[in-house]
Image (cartoon, rainbow over all chains, first blue to last red; front, side, top):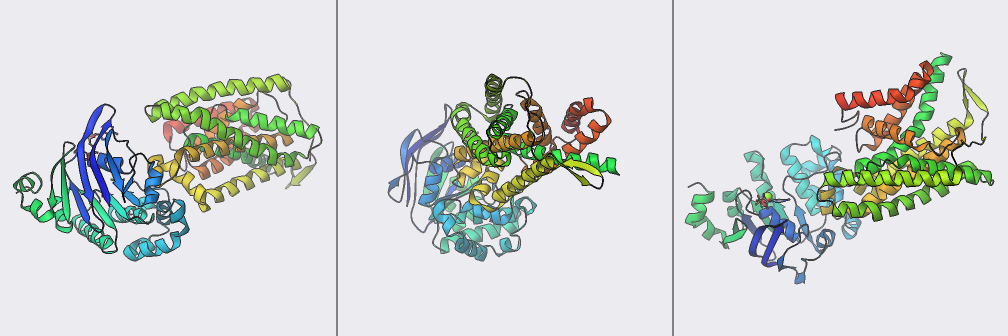
Length: 234
Length: 287
Ligand SMILES: Nc1ncnc2c1ncn2[C@@H]1O[C@H](COP(=O)(O)OP(=O)(O)O)[C@@H](O)[C@H]1O
Ligand SMILES: [Mg+2]
């Protein structure tokens, strides 16, 4: 579904991504793990058209997308749930969700999509009229995820959803990610919570200093000495 | 009592105009991040176009349907040409804000001098709806009441537009976080140009409304720009309701001060501005 081939990307003249390749098949949860500053968010920004790539190619559903602007990529079916949630804090939960459906095709169907999102996140329906900034961290993450679903995506890229949340809430977030997959949405999950991520994902990529240093199915990754030492603290 | 009504209601009437001018600047400065020093010049042009049309027999209130859309188009194009290219060329937002301030200064001089070339420097005025109405003994001319009512209706209509339409919501989202709004598929350059256009339209229409009650001069613009900057700071940068309410507050304060000592009115605005910056830079409705 998503095919990234040998891309490199820069901020100014500092190279951040080096020859990165990654594939996501339909129906999978693919994990992208790596420490702070590894280049995970940079990779997401390259996929979603926020950062131009210097070389390589990105294909989505067999179509080259690496020169398209962000709003077209959103319309093609990639949704980006950004790191740090990035809610419109002075707008209501309802309006935040509506903004997720901003693209014309999604806007036409926003009422039905909203019902679907409220089924997944019943708590958001209770909070519908509240300003986003008055919600707890966990609830805000749910708004961010709900907003990401409002564009009716085929692929959801979720950047560090568990960051800064209490352990109980983290479990809830991971459960929802699985639920989304069960509903037919393909997921690229970016995380630093390596153990839980590998437990719910199908395959994983490990990014270090802007390079993919390991890839494979999650069981293999969990068993690897490198992962155990560097990410699981064993 | 009569005296109080005179000051208070008089303040609210001029406050309605201040609200409209300031909502316009709030869109340009709070959302599009251009501290538009030329804002009052759009007001001056609006006022003179209405004056001009009135002299050739057009009903002054009807001129707003010409002035508003024309100013909108001029503002929109100005943003798409001058400010968009400054934005795209600026390495970071700080550079964009300072460069666009300089560009706005240039526009200020150009527009004001065009005004002087056409209309000279002597004040102009005409009479329209100048019978007085008594409110509890205090007298107000009809034209002031009509002008304030128009300003309030436009303010409320714009607020409903912002809260109830897809484009209005995109403007509010872009005001809070342009990058994330872009992520949602909002075309940021287009939305910011819209904001700048709406801002110019509001200034122009405010000018039309001012022309039906007060005399005009080509030097009138800057004073309104200063008022708008104070009101936008008072209301909270980027808060449209804040500018709306702030306009009335400043109107009443100005009215009270000028009752006491007319020469101190403008000075009192600066005092409010400085005190705000020191005590509550976020303004009354700011976050
Ligand atoms: N806007 C930016 N400008 C310059 N450098 C950046 C910018 N954003 C991130 N970087 C740098 O790029 C590297 C990768 O960052 P990032 O992709 O955010 O990592 P991760 O998401 O894996 O924590 C880091 O060294 C970071 O300092
Ligand atoms: Mg990151």
